[in-house]
Amino acid sequence: MEMNDLNERTLTIERLFDAPIDLVWKAWTQENHIAKWWGPKGMKVNIIEHEFKVGGAWKYTMPMPDGSEFISQGKYLEIEEKAKIVTTADFKPMTEGVELHMLFDEMGGKTRFIFKCIHATVEYCQQQERMGFYNGWGSALDRLADSLESANTVFSG
Image (tube, rainbow, N blue to C red; front, top):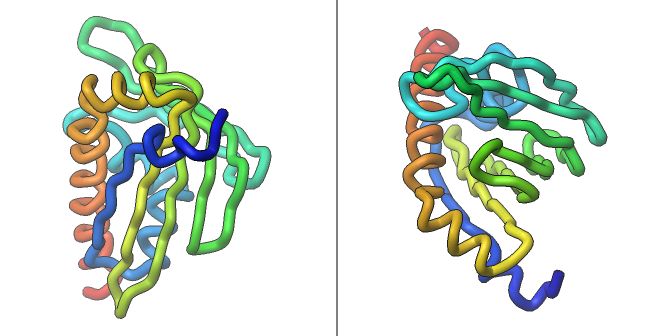
């Protein structure tokens, strides 16, 4: 892989969540939170494996209307408490061999969140963008925002 084309192989989404960093971190790292928002709206998520540590594996499945399963899985490569998570990721049958970088930054009670998906080639990156990367992850992050709002109300109420 050539590093000079890294930007061309990366799809990025940035969000400002109206929730404290502790809560956003838990939403990404704890099974009971992940199950509430992972995947598109209306999809049930089954947490098969979740070993949140460097070298640990994660695997989530979502039953599809046609009876098949959509499988999300990977291994954690890097974890900086409340700052950064790096993981490999396969989203079968659509996307394989990507690396996800999630960056967390506390901003006055809110959380700036940057999500980067790095692909092996520029062509693969462009294909994934055409297949609906921004809509798919945008939908999941909308669900995360809703989940954070609900949880934030519980914690502050």
